[in-house]
Length: 136
Image (cartoon, rainbow, N blue to C red; front, side, top):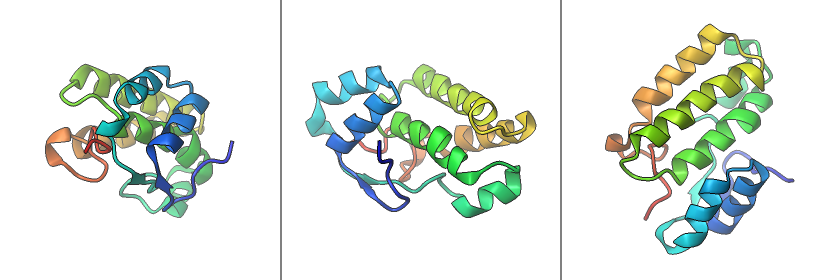
């Protein structure tokens, strides 16, 4: 599957393909049930970090972090259910584990990334990368 480049627009139909690729079946069901509730969004890699710098900070391949960890996490955030803190916590826990198991990041660094998304990704901020950001 061709994964999106950083800066590429992700349409709802493209998001469905990506969710299927990452076996995010609950998101596929959510998007298919109400596609009109979602808007297009731009894939920014690992939000708030210059992607090429990730390898310098972590000792890992930045592409592994971006495409094996950040992209599925972004999909979960984009289509997250508003107000569902248990879902958000589960998504963030998965992200932290993926950083270690799929990208080879040291656990202490993965925990720092986890702390960042817990604070910065809060729905209340309403930022381009906050929980539920693809909702209209």
